[in-house]
Image (cartoon, rainbow, N blue to C red; front, side, top):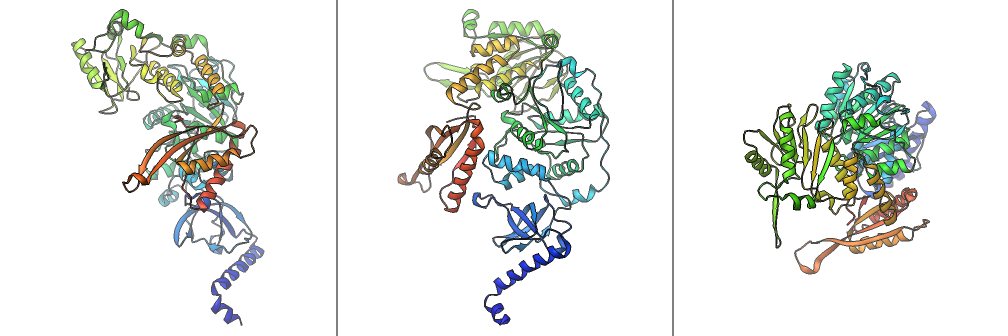
Length: 625
């Protein structure tokens, strides 16, 4: 009779035997024999753990955080163990291999991964793929020795001298205004305190070049190799080595780009983000969160401290202060006054008074500023980018870096002119010899002690951008650019701009302008006063999702901000098969954000199961429509 069952229902019999084996293992050795595995398959309705049997040979190797190989849909795929159990109500297949010799994340870190996945409408496997570098077996073998010694830092200027009365703690939440020419002094003071308290520090900056420069300085200051560098530009081997060393506790400090914000740390650690909510610090992959978003998530879920620092301020960081989620330490006014530049804004009314030649595109006052400062060192001229020419009744000429450099070379014969632009070649550093430097944003060469003067052209291009965060971008760029001038230097912004920006630059204080913008956002119902979600897809699909969200029982209810047509595509080239692609913005109160995101995720899972058209979700998009 047993033979008959085996012949007719062999598959079921084998699965039953496997289930009994699980119970037997649990009773004999007391070890968990079922692993809950998140498979590396980015499909919404598969975004949950699946049960797998842990064969006896793997019971000592399989832990939460282990990378495994399993069968999925007839093929071998990677997966991560997210929890363990003693039994299963299903018929689990066995794990094929435990590929990592050490767990690659902890249960504490897993809380953050789940939180980010839900808050930014990603699958858990997408978050794990972003947070954990690709495994390299050779790295695990080479890192079998003891952890490295911890570095010690000596601050040359007490942190209290720069930020009087600042209270640091491992779980502190701080929004700090950077002081020009005192950033490294501030950082050294923070690291001295952290190393004395045995607190780890993660530092993120927008670009790999900035991270590399900071890394070299930190190594030189501390005289230790126990400082990590984690940047997206690094090779998979380098990224995985840094991740594993961080898990071992090798590092007191890890510096890097967005990739570094995920670095494993111990119970007490602080994440410092510099311009952490800028475009350069934002992921292009799902989840589309920036370094500040992830730092906040780790603070909420892991109890880590956070310091959001910048020369400027954004509505996001100001909202953190105004809501009392974070504190703003007072800055030494005397030091700030001595270090910051003196900004003059030259707008259209000045052009009419001074006259502007199409030959050079600069007002006479800008030429005077160049002449007055050239003998003291290099002068920086920042231009928006490549030049264009538009004819709509009048000819508007925007001078690019190369053209501006050529014109200034003719205007100042005998003066060296250096052009640094992302579209051609970037010059990273220069000495203090007098010269004119023309650069595009982000390509400005570093000059020790700063430029003798800085001129920024065509302010209107940023001021009147259609982006929701145009003011944030303008303030960040111009404060950062003018901070490259030497202490007390006279600098100039050329072009039409918002009076609030003029006051912010003139007083070297962005907070009033950002607070006014925050109040306007509250009145209009925009982020961060509201949690906003963009739904992109075919018009009928987006309409179905938006209608379902309107029925979600939130108080106040989900608000549909609006819908616009974004583009049309055509699969076969015929007019009648064209699909209309639209964007609908939905919004709710920030306190309701997680509930709204749960509903959106549930709708996406249901649509995935029914094989309905997919909807792309973007949280708090910088461009509303």
